[in-house]
Length: 216
Ligand code: DX5
Ligand code: ZN
Image (cartoon, rainbow, N blue to C red; front, side, top):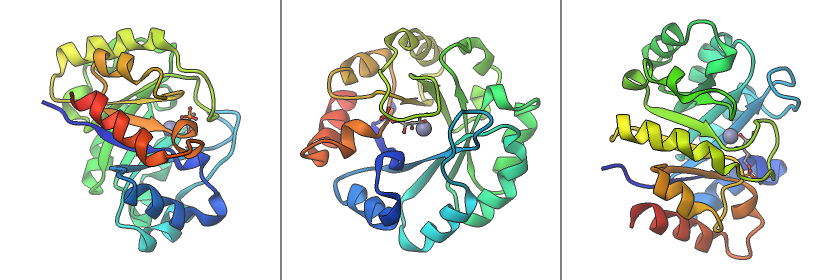
């Protein structure tokens, strides 16, 4: 049985107060801190990289769930290890040899995640899943917060959950109180949410609702 892990996306936070925002989310019940790394090449946006993670690390004990939306993710494994990342999630579409990358991430002591974009078929994941700590099924085109949840991606979650009952399956993009039941029913258990948590009047209530819906 997998349990809910709620991962606020700090992309929607005030970057000038990143450490405080992380601590605020943890105090409200967050399990993970989802850090969106974008390179302006794999996706049409730029955010942050290992130097920011390194600065953040001494200020939080939170689990840093790093989502690398970058080309050639293999070249950043050492930097993210040294920066103190807990999980290094790369995109299947961005690398030639996912197996070698997974092995290297593990050898460096991080957990390994693999993400697929909405148009990438789920069966590419199957051969890697037994070695992965987490699979991320994107529910928007990666690159920006605040987009609409693509419910058609839930078929992929259903297939994955059927084959891998104990796998941590993360969904990311447009997750909100209106669609959390659909994600829960499909079998997702790690919920990333930026806008719906940070823009809420009561972010703690949104986190609790997500957790309850997944665990019930
Ligand atoms: C999008 C990022 C997401 C994003 C989610 O490419 O991977 O993590 O921050 O933001 P919302 O929840 O606003 O869609
Ligand atoms: Zn993300």
